Length: 412
Image 1: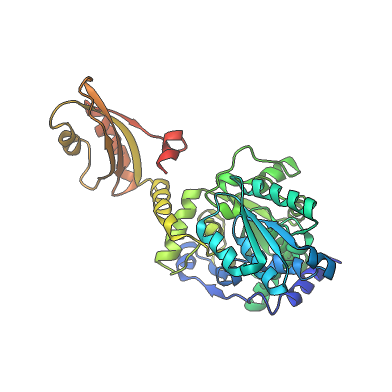
Image 2 (image 1 turned 45 degrees about the vertical axis):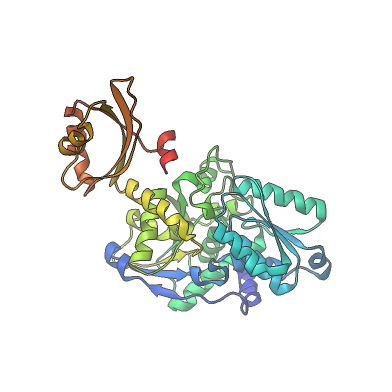
């Protein structure tokens, strides 16, 4: 069967399980970009992400013997929820392998959606560690491995989103922006549009710390990244799929990356302005809009792919956003071991709109100076130059803690 036929069959198969999620016009993003921005709200899907589409499409096609043997999957969290719900719905015993970086909220949702049908296994530090464990389980037990992205049935299930977009708009959009992890969503959506509406520009967005599809396209084959930033855990994949890669390569889709700090800023804007709770991977598509070349008035659909964000992570989200926007900086400051040193620092170095948000200092009586770790929040990013000049003029030695250093990562 062709991908178009597979997607059509998947749409029929998942009709009474996956919701037709809203396509909402977003005023904030439309005003900022000059384009007409629409959000495909897969954060309101079963399991709060699009993953139910692919997982159910795979499991629903298993015969009686395969269902009796059970199923297994690896997940950063969202695929596991879709898989768990599908197993419970179809009466299939399943096991979900997740890395230790998967937020507690997602783990709890997997067990809640799967109930007695699901066993949750936490293993390794990355999605790829969990994937290796799931593959071993499948080979040992005979359970069906339900890939999060690298299976034609999964790809076809994710591709049903493209069908809904056109049906809801009653026409093809000019641009579609989707997040990219292993490539299943991009492969399904981009291939469907390439076949049905080739004029549509499809853009895949990867986190800067896990741009595995861009690496694959550069090498003309899937390659493994040496290092992955797992903050955007829903898209933090070290190596894209062998089946997703050629579909993406041949679809004419383009790719871009977004810094994790920019993702955090967009998460906060979605929450504070639009009233939408998005996880990091869920905010990838809209976070990229600022640096995309969009025509004025173009119809742009962004996939808001997940709403499984643990509230305990918002402190880190705020911190990363502040650093990314240039509002928060950290310094190691050598203070003289004498009374009034801190007061002089406040009076002579800090500006009127600057604030200390972190101060850790241990006085050592056997030294002339004592080090302190100081976090400073600026009133505006442009105030940094003046702050650095005042530090240089100060008798105290001040050393910036640069982003991406080990100490800076420790702070975050």
